[in-house]
Image (cartoon, rainbow, N blue to C red; front, side, top):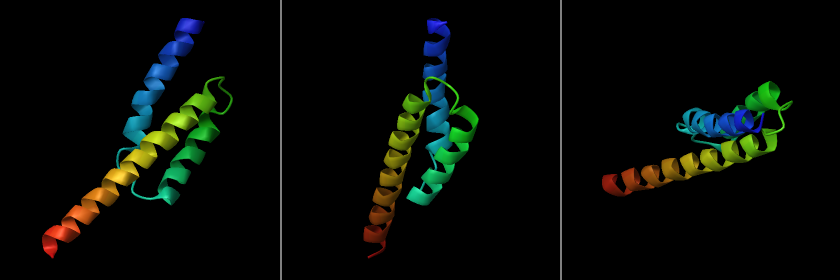
Length: 76
């Protein structure tokens, strides 16, 4: 059972990256988190999954903001 749970956590981090890779706003991230919570809150590893979703989403948002700033600088 534990090996199955470890496999699920490993796969969930891959899934999380796929879900949040194009995330650009906190509102969008919250919609993703709520949707995943509805599907997976019954699982024992949901708190870890939620943490991964929020972390990777915030990283994607930061990257998006940096690219926007870089594009703005290039235009000026």
